[in-house]
Image (cartoon, rainbow over all chains, first blue to last red; front, side, top):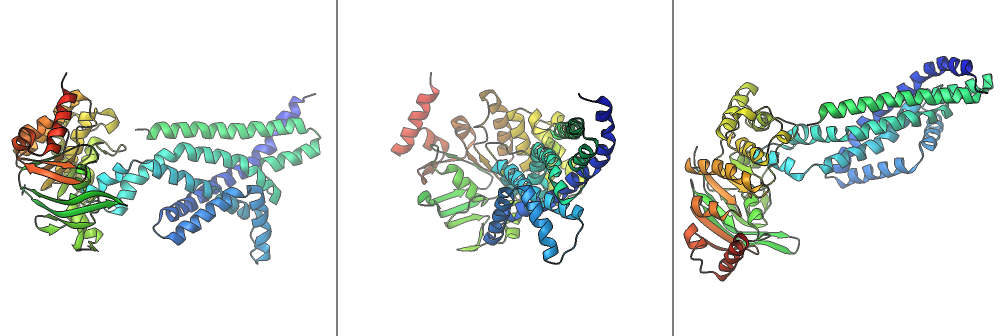
Length: 215
Length: 256
């Protein structure tokens, strides 16, 4: 039988654990945005070495599961003499993984802009820096917002994987809770509700941003 | 506004093996309107885009008021800064308007004045609003392009170009993307510019505009400049069979 009290009681510890889920997702996407921008710039640069590097970066990180990346990263660092907390390793791995997808989102948005947009700026005598900051990027960023929110939602869910390196986020907390209460059904449904609530909020935020930036 | 002239000498352009412009020679006279006509794919737009080096020509010379554009010497590319300096005084209007959709009409026109001419924002907006008033859009300045009709968008694009006080204006099929009932308002703005002595080069399929406003009409086909003369010589008494055949097709399509 489903026990309502057990179900309601499991929210407390799980919501407390959700701070790690949120921290890892938001720090991860923040790092992913920065690295993704650099990778995207490398991908579009005139230098073939940079373009190759970016292409390899993207295909490697998209081709290997995040779970495996986490384990590789986590167990490689001590070997090469770097001692970082599991939390930092998790954020960096999630950020690097997201950077591959984000760079492709931006590359797609930039490629989708009609060529006439930058041509009009060129014809008026604008230089490359102004063309990028005033014409291309504002439009590409707006266009990429839905895909970026989508990526953030994916990260919130993917952050459950960092439980393997011992971080007590929602999923790991619910596993622990289920083990001590012997009520896995109630606990995991509570965990599902929290994930859903977070992602519904993000979806609403996404729609708000899209609406506000629509022209 | 000081009028400008353009000399095009033996210009060639290749896209891979495709010979897009073949030894094109053309003089654009200062303060006059030159219309480029001809079938699609004949190289009219390519030639026009060589004038501000949006398209790089492979050989020959394009001189604006005597100054070679795009190259310091044959085969030696001009620096980006020098090229931008030259482009400042050449306005261009595109078939698809190419307004920046994230800016209002006023911001579209002021942008170049701020970024390229380095004017303070207030002065740039003042000049932008004067340019928009001139094209009849004083009441639409705060609209984004998506809230404007095609004809209004193209007039904003013309305002964006003339606000920079160019000495030469290039029009690349400025009315081809417009609904028929919106063509007139754009042509009227262009006629006003012409009557003020602006040097204009217009790629167009509007034979009426070519006949009534142009000082000279150049006909192109398959990358060659077939003939260049007064509108009446080209449009009414063409001696080249290629021009005759083009005009025959044009008249047949437009008669009912």
